[in-house]
Length: 363
Image (cartoon, rainbow, N blue to C red; front, side):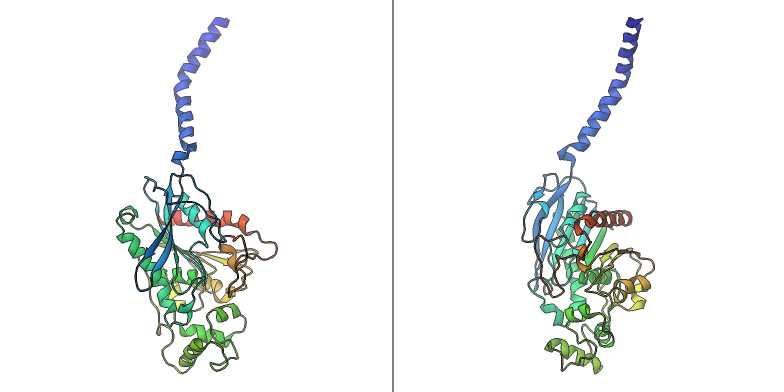
């Protein structure tokens, strides 16, 4: 009887061995570092009268490490070889006013791990070193055009152009970057609305001060910023304002956008309603920089097709990577968080939500 049982067990093992071994090999292949995708990092400079510096994150099999880069700690491998697997798509990232190309590094590396090429630009004239474009008279038109210039360069690149799948290009933006990606999606800015807004309300001081616009009760003569004062005066007199009467800079190559705490009061309601590109909208509940009802809430009210949500307890900078030291700016400390809000913990949710939205839209 025992002999018969041994024979039966041997036969059962012989029959089950092949599928068990196959399953084991598949599991080992999945867990192998060679099959994982990490983030390589290069710096790309798009030439022109105003060169655009770009942090280019790309999939690589080389294991990444935490790399101290000023206040940021991205998990990347600089100069690593590019993964052989096809790219899932291209995502462009636009930072907020006075920002940096590394300010959303954790979101970039998450998207790279999913198989995207990610291009995070430093906006010339509106970055941590230089905000001269604010009063240049071309702010609303030039910011989106800078993103389109980066897209032009990548599509024309012998290395990257052939690898970027047609129709799989998205854009993510925060604050003024949120304005930027909505403009690329088709929203039209009427620059005179900015000065009119600041003259008529007193509860959006962050926007008005960052834009160097006279607030309610001020005049062009009382504001300290001479270029902005001249702009406001010309607007009040009926002369052309910043960028002319209407700014239309849509880029039809961009098929989906994510706008995080966007600056949006300058958009016309009709142009927001006309957006056909899928939009993911995120608003910070405790935004002390851009008052929600005039910006993110305004977009949600006029673009009902947007997939929108308000992040409980979040401040304006909740969508940026957590800096390891204070980041003083005209809008406040970009490293600070409202009491009780854990930015690092929230980013696990943020990264998944953005990745899932883009994966659905860029199929």
